[in-house]
Image 1 (cartoon, rainbow, N blue to C red):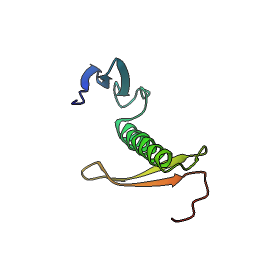
Image 2 (image 1 turned 90 degrees about the vertical axis):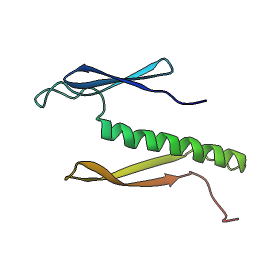
Image 3 (image 1 turned 120 degrees about the vertical axis):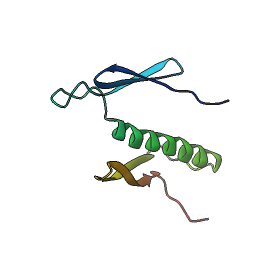
Length: 101
């Protein structure tokens, strides 16, 4: 089934993302205003981390590896001209002893 997300402008640089009955607000009305929610770039890193965590947890469960302390970190490297995320580094701590088999 295809995934569908709808993005609409709320005001200035604030946008609403809607999917599956949920919504997320992100951006700033203008450069002097406080941010609304996480920035779009941070949301991208968060989404990558959440997706990775889900797949790691699924893999560990299928391999019958107890990993109650699973945690992930995502670092993004950003470029300036043009402004963009150019690299992501994901660190994973499964919170379990792995024997390398």
